[in-house]
Length: 278
Image (cartoon, rainbow, N blue to C red; front, side):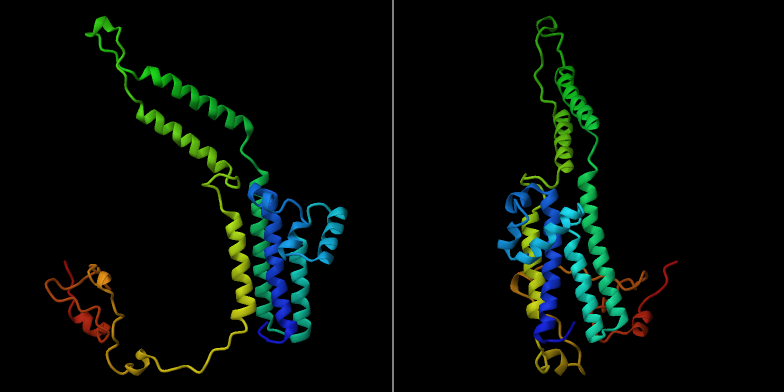
């Protein structure tokens, strides 16, 4: 969809908006952060991702068929692509590629749902919690060392069970990994991801797609293309860093100067400087 007429621009914009809407509907169902931001589906109207007519159509379809709300924008995209194919006749490979990418996007959203639906069994979490807390409590006393020479073994040597505490912390990390969509500071920043996707997608379809490149100017490398190409400049700080240039081959000459950074060095000349180490 490379045309720059208003109709094509609206179609590109609608495709980007529907992709973000479908993703937002999925994240709203699995994340409490996004749920607090968009408590109702109608909240997307004020956000600009949904219109009044589209909201009515989505709600009507959701009443007739449950759990198809997030799929509806993706089917709208298929209809837009079909109209584009009938009117402008794009290449078959390009049309198939768009449909394939749309299918992959839908599969990824469905995988998010599957991750949220299939939880870790409650019995496993309870057993792991009880076992970890009990083990921590028992080792807190069991790993203390008694000194029999001090007051006939009645004085307890106070120590800190470092390894036991580390095991307890790993258990807390596992609990956090079980709920990546929560409101903790270490959970996924889905609101930021959603905002960034909206900005980037609209920038691509509305600005970059309509941007025309000017006549190409002659740059420094073009002017020196017949000579040895200059290296990119360094700042004062970067010049102090030591560079470790990778070797092109397994066997290099010992004691010779490394000339692999030279742009004029060819494979034939470099092979003469190499010898086989037996």
